[in-house]
Image 1 (cartoon, one colour):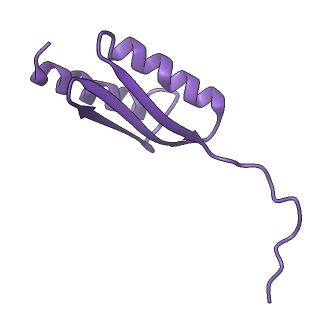
Image 2: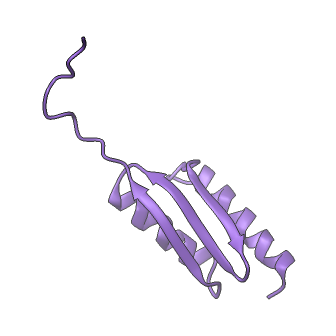
Length: 83
């Protein structure tokens, strides 16, 4: 595949993430040579898996590297002490 087609597929994937049920704007998608890199923070492990599944579908045939961190949204174990 040529670079132009890869960029088109990446742009289409960005749009899909923004409009689908995922409504994910915090994931950065970059072409790195012939591979695609996904970075960012997502709210849950389930959300991360859904994004990776969509990436494998939309970007099939391209090497995919993901560095997606799951945000810790647990409440603190104790109250914050203000001085």
